[in-house]
Length: 306
Image 1 (tube, rainbow, N blue to C red):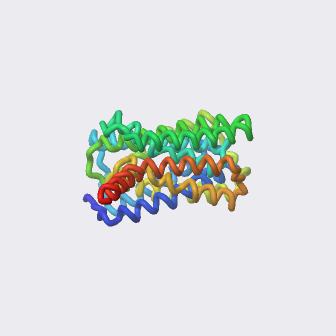
Image 2 (cartoon, rainbow, N blue to C red):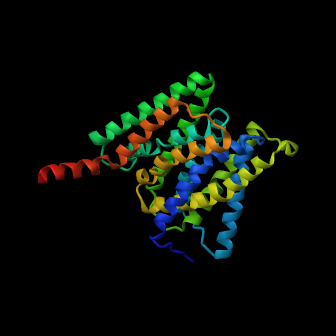
Image 3 (cartoon, rainbow, N blue to C red):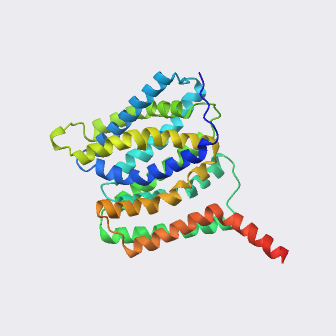
């Protein structure tokens, strides 16, 4: 039986993604404090998979398994595995607010990839300017981090790769035409992703030192499993079905601010002047990227009327 989610749920789902993504970076940092990153992300995905499969079973939602559906699950898993696994490794080197800020580049990277993969129009002058402004901000953040710790560059490389794979996955999803329930698409993607996380845990760790696990890490894993993975992915895949990939990535315009505030208040993370300036440039560029063209048109219309 196919369950159709009403279009009016798009704004609600969009806000859920914003709220969940704002808390996810801090959750990743906390969950990796006493649990190895590969095991932390594996447990998170197992929780989401078991809950998602249970919902499918009891709600009698069909899980398509034709060629088109499997393609959707595969391309979705690129963002889950690449984006999540590398983010967990990056958490050992970067503050949660910085990770969220770098993920703010997702709309720009999605836009660039969409030109090649979806044949979307090339960037206008305004969007090219937005790209330059955002990367200037990223450069300021990177220079600040590199001056504070010599190994921060490892985290920056990891998180940049993560956001690139996440953006690629979001664009590739748009190439698959299929009518599927968002819970089914989430579970399908988790079915493809979870074995990769198991392999990663076996390769990089493979141990279960339960005696060293702390309650904060376990609560963070549980939160991320239920909200960060299951509910967050369901909301993300749903809005992705109804909006452009670059528009969905707009949530990263809002989440860095919340994430940095949460990191400072709850995890005693330092917000340096360079980080604030860099974040300002990144957010300014993202705002220009998303709204610059429409504001330019309105301004020209007003000038024409005068």
